[in-house]
Image 1: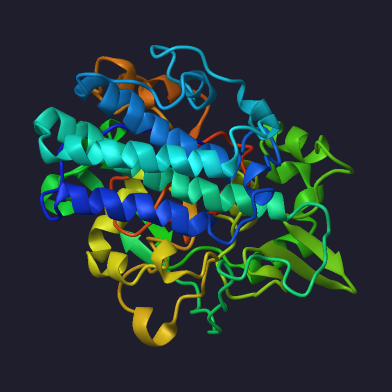
Image 2: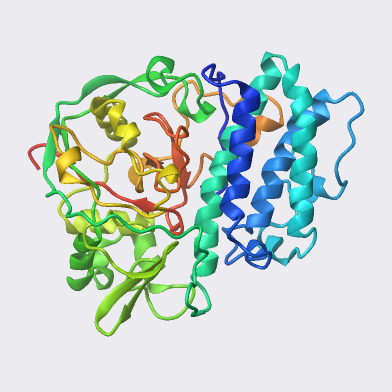
Length: 443
């Protein structure tokens, strides 16, 4: 998530903190195991970061917000890391310019891993005697690291898409996974009568942990609406392209049409990120390598502009985040258990399987792709950021961004819930972002 900032309230009690800390931290190192030191240094565009930087930044978080506060004789692993691996915490000090992170050949990947090992050893002593406030900060740091695990996957995917390098195994073997082959279920519509409902984090339904942008829980209203049974898939997007979707200004917001026409590289956009045509067929880049598009898999790597234009073309609209959350509450907890999240190892959206996922409720509300909503990323009524540097995690980003819901195939299991609010600017494409259609009843 574009270093998507968050904060938390509450600490899960279902897993000892030391064991959870070790598990989350080990997972980050597992994800970069297939990468070379050269891979880990690449920054393909200013919005992404090198894998090496992600590993160091999440470690910086624990060193800065836990060890520096709790250790009686604190000494940083390296004084320069304070600035090099600070992302956006102005209260902590200066930050190395984000667009230049890929220029840092040093510290080496080996030194970053040594940094992680040093901080982890020191954190063990702190966790053993941590008070409630320290446990809360550590839990926040673990969820922060899980966010960067997703970013690590999306950022390295973007880096590996460049250059056209060809080899017998162009994508790291440990990242490659076969895609499930299954036909898509037909799209149909579910009606919701709307009305007043409670929006936001509910500990009884969502677990103890949440980021502060999910609070306070409050009463909201939605008019009656219909929601599509599943996300838009690649085959449906191909129909949009073939109908001139990228050439019709009537479908696009003004800023969106400018975005289509003013592509940063080459001619106007004519297809989503990672798509290219070869011998009359469309192919896409994945973490499994380059593959021909699968018509039945949910569409991904769409900007808000693209999602909004498609909804207009389809005679529908994007849901509000309130509508999305209301529908997600209806599908129940089993939807999370069967979701295509990062633990499945596909790292690509998969089609809904008709034999197990059909029923009287929408499917794929969680996992596969983050779903754009039409809602601006604004504070909930009564929202107040917490004091101190960690208060910068969320509130200051509530401007010029849109909310996405539901998680993706790169989101760690246990990290997403019905109230989780992701957010990106409308031009962002490199995340696993897609859409689900909504429409007003009677439209």
